[in-house]
Length: 173
Ligand code: AR6
Image 1 (tube, rainbow, N blue to C red):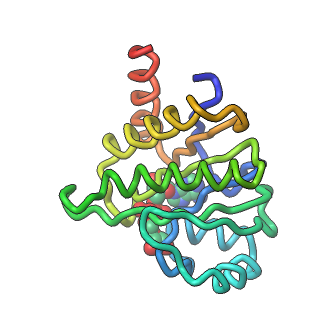
Image 2 (tube, rainbow, N blue to C red):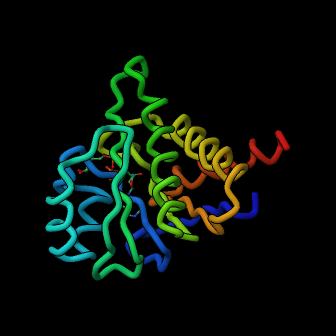
């Protein structure tokens, strides 16, 4: 899948049509990638988030990017990992699908994802990487408008997990 790529680094630096935020359901800002995105975007981002009325787990909402190099932020709310029997995999998959749908609805061509739920929300990274790659690959099978989907990894372990999931996909043809 030539439209998917993995990069190691800080998502707030990327010049893409949208970066995805690993947000909470109140869209109130927080730590981790959420904190970094709000810090880089400036206070206008939180002001716009406050007008959105929150966002359910598994869903996503879009805002402008303000001072970020990215034009938009898609705020996706991942599940907190409670052991795996609380619908966590399906909710995480839904985050990827909803974010991609929003990007297409807004005519966006490039989107970058962080490892949603893999930090404070403690989702196991191997399983999360598999879900992320599978959902994006499935989506791209039926969509021709998105040109670039970037998986942004903040550390080597996550990069390895995404790379392995991408390799599996290639092996499977
Ligand atoms: N660029 C790319 N990835 C990053 C960056 C960055 N600048 N910073 C961290 N990561 P987390 P979650 C990675 O905890 O688990 C917040 O308080 C990080 O290494 O940011 O979905 C929200 O408000 C990890 O792999 O998100 C929510 O309350 C991944 O991003 C809650 O945390 C996600 O880690 C969401 O938790």
